[in-house]
Image 1 (spheres, helix red, strand yellow):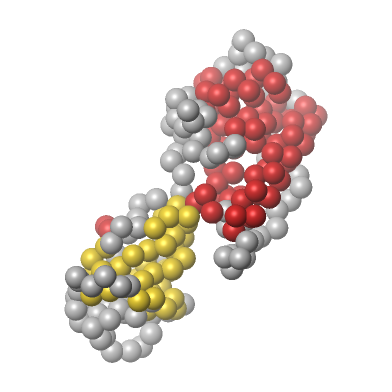
Image 2 (cartoon, helix red, strand yellow):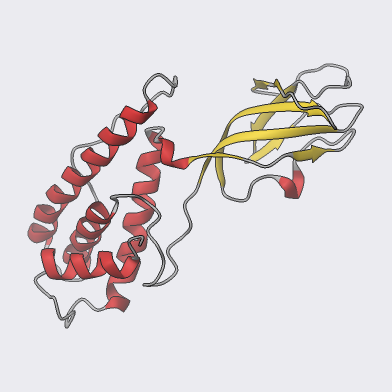
Length: 216
């Protein structure tokens, strides 16, 4: 059974905030901090190229002359990494080339190029309809309530500790306790990044450094 936001709240209040009955730190108080910690972990994964965010779209048909993916662009996409195309009915895809700007070139029967601009996948266009597949980094399902799944294997420790640290600092007015709990959050974060980067080795993903302390 996947870990839920309620599990993170229980661990945060009982292990880190010494409030197992949630007298002070209720579900309603803790949920915004759970959401914040969840978003932070997703950002850390994104910045470090962690494979849990990798996704492949279903086949999208780009009509003749179309310059964007339009409403067919994956709704959970944070950033596209690679595109490939084929003619309708073909079984083999060919790689497309990413550009910074759309080339000043004539359209052909192939799309050939793609551009990521204004958070849209954009094309030079083709004279014929093409089928496209997108490899991308996805966003996790947002936390909406205490019954929402966290969606990250072994992410419970970080989310519980980080949300507890935020609650201690901003609701409990205890920055010293918050800083102490943040040290636990950093431990969990380092372990998650270490595990995730091991699975990404050899994939050519540029990983960004991250701080040993958490702020805010």
